[in-house]
Image (tube, rainbow, N blue to C red; front, top):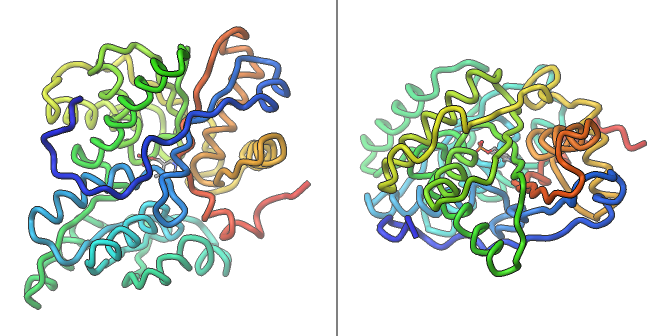
Length: 333
Ligand SMILES: *Cc1c(COP(=O)(O)O)cnc(C)c1O
């Protein structure tokens, strides 16, 4: 275990289950497809940020913080999980929401994750796309200090080395499940956005001697930018856990061909993937991250890019709360 020395608060239901998807696998006629259920981490409808927040909030508590400041897109799953964690730990939560999607609908602005943020009583402030959020968060932190409070900033997606520790832990958990359940995976597929999930997994696997290939499906940035972001964070995280150099640059792969018109903008392939997983397996995926990552995985399977007699595990990072915000944009064919 690489993680025992870090401050951590229990927030997630762990280990998350590893489930085989027989009907989807048969329908696609390719490899056996499994899903790691990080959509079921238990906090406020779950998702991947909860594992990261165990470490971010652990550090916040250690520093004596009483107010969390964080940032995300309007329909951020990260913000929703952070707002819930702050409530559970008796802290206030200041949220900066970035308007990243063009012409947002009424539902996009008020339903889904935003509704849940409001239920958790987070203070929501809205900003234009491209705002300098580091500066804006520092300014709010100064205001809180001036009022006698103690702020703690969780970066977007909790994607710094401390947050990425959550996915170092997920990598270790997956290796343990493979041993216990006697499964050998040939590929791990995950959505990759603010990079902490992908980077943490890379460190958790390589730092424990596993060479399981990781395919990130990008949802935001172009390939070179995304891979560099993941690699840099993986290097920092590897240093933090005492495994410097365990991840190499050419080991980080992000396929960014499934983004469509942009972050949070629906695509036909995402729409098809969300309906396919719902109707073959009774599972819910989201329009912004896990649905686009699934669309990538399905395309790889259809193109024969995974061997037929292989086992693929898809990390389900959650996000179904966002479906409600996209109700007007999904084609329910
Ligand atoms: C944040 C998020 C991701 C991406 O994880 P990163 O660590 O930001 O790369 C994937 N899926 C869902 C549902 C998310 O909320």
